[in-house]
Length: 82
Image (cartoon, rainbow, N blue to C red; front, side):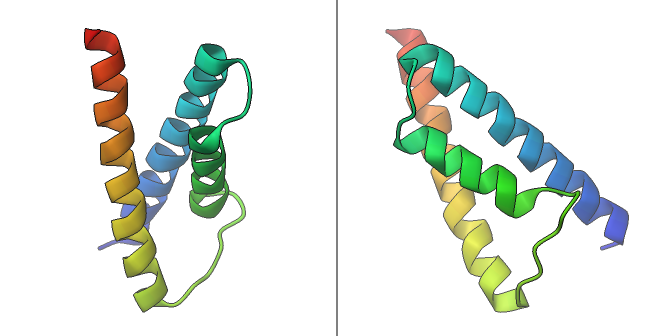
């Protein structure tokens, strides 16, 4: 994939994480485990000061963070339904 694709993905993930941090803070009015997870996501995937890791490490982190984002999305969906 072209480098621009990865930059777009980094911007999308970072902005989603920052928005999620904001929502978590508004909901709980304190720092919880999801807030910390989203903060780490924003730092790790930020496009401005990239963190360089090996390809295998990135693959593991991508799967881990994607799984956690799915869990968070389901959590948010369940909160909105109730």
